[in-house]
Length: 392
Image (cartoon, rainbow, N blue to C red):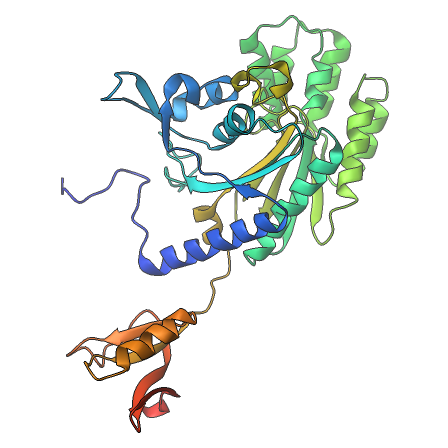
């Protein structure tokens, strides 16, 4: 095997693609900043017992593990930044009011999450801590959509659901954790036969409710059907009303509902959940929702069990469907020790221009930038002029 071959689902990112990804990263962070989100940078590795605390336990199989040569303790390479941000909010910031945070950095997975996915996503995300109301749910949805619009991704569909619906149907059930996990998997997979088998010993009302839930996906008519069927199920009418409220405030996108969806782990989310799809993108570009109390395991007091809602996306996945920006225009300069040339180039770069110096013997080579102008000497002064069409 050649020494330069990379592991499966790990790849170098070459200049053109790297430039595209970096432009997207900056646009996403700028969009989040426009909503008042403050940037945090979490470490790539942490002690394993901290990294897999609380909600992080679900990431155990996706986490690369190693031993710290300084302390001898087990370390983990983060597979998701969201639990780290919850730790930062709970243990370091100690904010009693609203905290809006965003992040962008690499994560590492032991296995790809889907076909053709990288094991080294560049994860961007945003979170709102401290507000339990649906207003924060709506704001995080607006921010997610604005991030995709900033990336020039259109034809969007928002798929809404709520973790409290299956939880309400299963309230009071004495089934073991393994059975409940299998039930949620059957709901997510729309596997009626498996669900029928798993719920054979459940109360009739619970069993029928779960089997009905499988078919409740589609447009807003789904909510009407659910309102009729679950009118007497404690808590569900309010949840359905909230989903309708959110959907009515999402403009310029299609909205669908999948009330049985449990993608991402049924034990993690505590309320509204969403995924955003784009034409031709295949899997969802964005996933998020409400996960109240995720930071409680990191706080010293009960009040650290704060409301939280957020989303994340893989910038590398987004780059595959986002429209590419045109090549940045640049100025070509000659290589010379002539007086004033260096100062002229520095002044142009200080104004934000890209100045590409043609090294000796490479004057006729093309480069990755669109050099539409050149720096030339005229009457003892260095000036910028358009390239003659015949020489471009």
